[in-house]
Length: 254
View 1 (cartoon, rainbow, N blue to C red):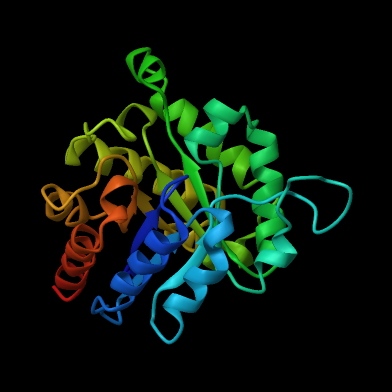
View 2: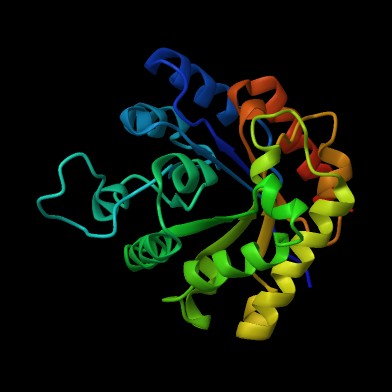
């Protein structure tokens, strides 16, 4: 089954307005193959200037988070309805939201529901901590994240779901999961999706996140069940991010 590759850059809480705009302009100049999707996720204050910088390019704009309601007395939260006017996607359940901010699995599922309701693509992030992996619970944790994150998602909505496997111990550490480990878990996630949703589940794109870089991108992206990457540090430089896009272009043409 052929699946379109994704190279997504999560800029996290980084960059000034000028830096974000300059980076977006650099990414917009990168050649993108028809069989590849590219997206960037800047910090919320820079969504509008980054949208302007990306105008006319094939690069999609995403937000790093949103709330579960469209409107109301929720000071400081971000409305998915408002985001839908400028964004095509939103991250849900990134490990930093789960483990630093304390978001529950159930809250993540409600965010996915709200993102889909507002017509955007939900990037559902799943993944285990080092302690959970060493305890032999890695697959169990990923299955729990899938179960709760997709609790409100029907088969007809799966074309707007991307699953991002991001082992917590590999995020921002410079220590990526081995290509074998990443492939094995992405395959496990795909098997779960297939058992739950059938062929529609098998068609969901599963990408890897965790210290993806130009030095390991070919090995990771060449694996059968890894459909691209959710990239942190390497997405903050147009040259390194462009190298990842180029790798996806090359591998998608094989």
